[in-house]
Image (tube, rainbow over all chains, first blue to last red; front, top):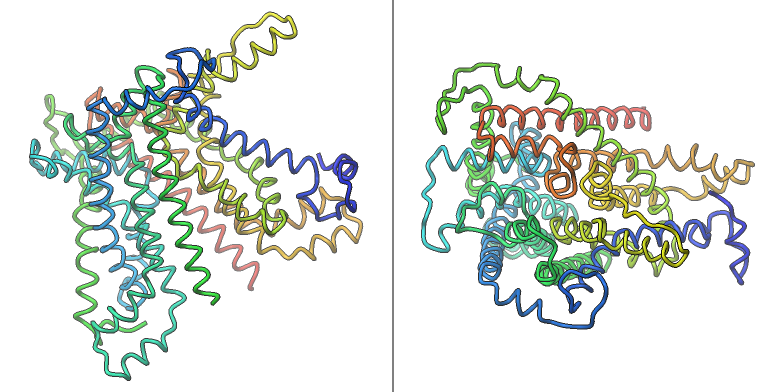
Length: 287
Length: 291
């Protein structure tokens, strides 16, 4: 595998040094192969959402009729609105709870702190199916009211989503606080700032980039979640992934491709936004 | 860091809401499941908690032990494939020209933010009998004038492993990249100068130094693979059910909640076991590095 020969032959510049792995053919082939493997299925999915043919996988010309069909599908639109509503609600609650946890872990020493930190990260490590099952058992045992009017009927799913996503926000925000300069706080206190003023004017502004990145992470996690939602959703509280799942179970149709493409575009946009914010945060640190 | 005595109000304001949430909507639900695992079914939805071990004993039935073993086996194969593919990919990104690095990293991260269900669905379209892989093969066979029989790529264990690798590869590449990025390149150069072959330098220098990243990557791939539900559900056949699918069936179709509860706690114990092994390995390494 480690033949430097072809790489050297194909390169017109100086021959690659022993550590120029990136200029060797086999390395480039591995990278290329991996990216083809990662992207080809998604690329074909997006491409064929515009294909003017119901079943055939041959290209029959460009069309947007499957997008129109997806838009006209009331169940799909309703599921989409549910998903966005749940994602927004759970993101707001997760951001508040996550910020509190980050501040708590950064600021205070208290008995059994390692145990507490372990308990907070538990939602990140336990298998999704276990949390889903737990939510199903919990809500059915305590007799959570069902059949409430919209949007209150989304309460169960929202609670379940907050339970796993606020831990992620807490971890990202806590990591951000590691770069906080304690002298800033001392200066604020010397200038007469009270406890709340320090938090509001010094600590929260420093935490904000981490908090925003964590919140965007919570948003995509909520929008993407299938397994936990699957166990907490009822017949009238279908979310987008649950709806797509029931469509996929029946058949592979261009309409599902179109709906999926819309969701891909939304999540990629949110991701790029999150990465951009994190990059700016990195620039802040070095500047 | 301060003791809570100095700011009791701030401490309680910040600790109560998240702690109560964690207790009420996470620990208590898990507690419910734990207790339910010691119950007996009485009628359609009634369960009586009799503290019987019947459900756990039933989980030791060869049928269910076999499914546990199969889940562990499928996850292990997935992890090994991810490691074998992930190492050269991470190495390639680390040694890529600086202006390419962020692009390559973004390309690795992006799919993992795309909806899991959608990615699995995309794989179905690629792998099915009349999917793109078979279509390409048929086209190639036609061009060469060879007889063509579509390959059965979907609804079997291979499809599940392909799907799991597809979904979890970024989880392996990122920690490997983080570990390799910190690696001191002069060590590899020194090994090569002293006459080691590329392969020997890789095995005796790169791999041991990247070990923390390898362990993290292995855990990050193995644990979610073990608990995966969607991939075996959509890509697997009748004999490629993993433990999560069995748990789901107990709670939906089979309607045997106590047994499902016992199984899901067993899955959690296996997960914690894997995490404990990781913690032990990490501690041993720390002792090796700083005696």
